Length: 179
Image (cartoon, rainbow, N blue to C red):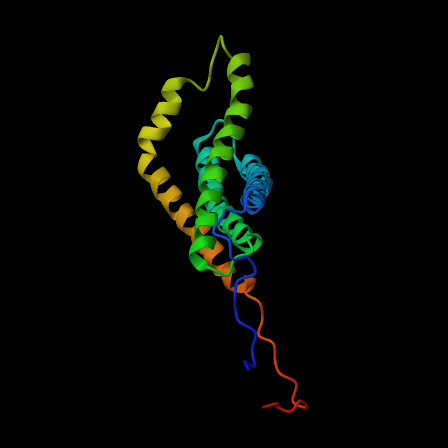
């Protein structure tokens, strides 16, 4: 007779827990948007003019760091709520959460920028050339940030898998063995 309960995961399914993935995505959005507002308050108040390059550079660096931080905690949330003790399955939850976070960040950016583009149709300050310039000049930095962000989301989820395993059951000392 075993003294310990088996350390089987709480769920033995290999299926994705979409509720965990969406929860991780919402954690990402909450952290990212909250700290973006803080970064705008800090760097917007310290810049000489709103169009200065130092404000844009400061907010870009700030948002890059906050995005990595938010992706890590989004992965941890998805890994913990997935209910699996298998590190590989938890890691896949983190990677899918990473994809959902990137999709939702692009969607939020488009929803915020589209009305501004329509309002400034006559004198557009953000043009297609400006967006193309952003991606051509910052392409390597964007790739590196996304690569590191995906790794952080997956490792955060995998680190939570060990918390989803049932604890061992100890045998009381006052019981006698039978047989």
